[in-house]
Amino acid sequence: MSAAGDHVATGRWEHFPHDADIGVRGYGATPEEACEQAALAMMAAIVDPATVRLERAVDLNLDAPHLDLLLVDWLNALIYEMAERRMLFGAFEVKIDDHHLTGRACGEAVSRERHAPAVEAKGATYTELAFIEDRPGLWRAQCVIDV
Image 1: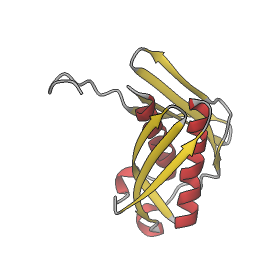
Image 2: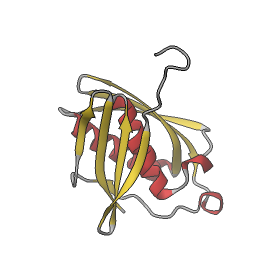
Image 3: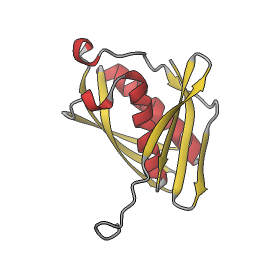
Image 4: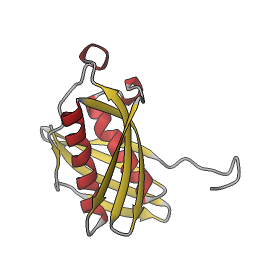
């Protein structure tokens, strides 16, 4: 952590066009932050994450041989948990150690009236999958979400 005032925010997310599906892209100073931002990008395709109350946490543990595969597994695990628990998430924490991802998603039960979900995410795909360090201190994690 840098001294107060020295920290430059690098975490951000965006969508990119892809036929009928939605491309999600997360950027961060670390692979963990890029994963968190990619999850926020996916959520933002469904609902405004700011409308999601952080009432319950769901913990996830995943293993994959490469960062890009961890990303797909992370997003697919979130999609599964949203469907299984009938929840939406608004905040994420990720730790990556070697080939293991420990994640936490915080959110609440879906309220169709308050949240008005725009789409249903069906799955993260390998389409346009990338997880790379674009330049020192700027990681990009992206893939296409089937909606």
